[in-house]
Image (tube, rainbow over the protein chains, first blue to last red):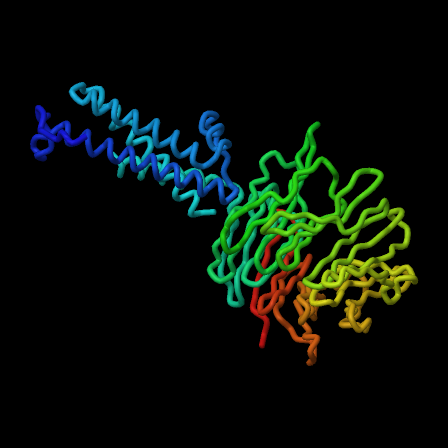
Length: 118
Length: 337
């Protein structure tokens, strides 16, 4: 993700001096950080004894151990992030990053206030 | 996008909580706090330990931090068909939930006030014979089948379990403090009961006969703290009631207060102070009273504008539950110095 050369600026982004690739880069970085936060919050909620993992795949890896769950979750999202970066010329990559980041931000925010309320 | 998502997540949580029926109505009073459960009511006697008050409302188990008034939902009941009265120590609250249906089982939970961690201490298909109790860092329960029951101790932090007694006639009482565990044995529900005392330091057990136990008096709401039993004794023939303490080390009994049966409520006891409720002068509501075992006269703590169902004390805090069900509430206060 070192290639931050400006691509064709889109109208509103251009006025802000941000290229589409720069926006995609920051969105993917946020997505990766949010994924790590989701992992930490899930672990903490499980440790607190109030949560159960509803995702069957993650439940399997959590059952296998913390390291397995961490490697899987970080690994699969890192792979997805790299894939979107490879597809950065496609408008769909930016749209996917926007949607994924927004949804994950909502999930992490919900989880954070819920854990704080326990 | 992150900010939009975060706002959406927080807003979703706020909307969900606004529609939650577990949330109590909490107000600050001149003496402490008042809490009620307008949607689901309060079902059992609350438990007070230090700065924490725990109670059950419908399928929910809640803990209130009395220094801040913040209430946390620690047990949501889920598929639980019934919950059992909650117990509390300085560090934890312990309660049980029994699920309904064909796969009926009972789960005993512990919630640590400091770490806010909830643990499952036991999940069993056996029946609970008495509500779980807790003392220090240990939880105790009485569980069994139709033919035999067992008193079990469980280290709350480590989860290690130890069976203290097995028998076919154990229950209905199970009491514990930091030094003793006391359980009753009763062959039939209407039969006279015997009591066994276990000294947890030495492991020695002994039989215990309470004063007036043989006369057929009713032994009600027993509580054990600091090596002393306190209970409400009701004489069915004379309709007289008395709150009595009995020191398990010196075997000295002491009558704290007497009165007509049905008028005295309690006792609450923390090893140093006995609290109870009695009708207020003039017959309007109840008055919550206290007496320190170290000496001094009985003192008035508060007046409740209703029938007190139970009273409890722990250190400098006292709490009382007024009424029962959806119209009931809990009030707290600090003990007068």
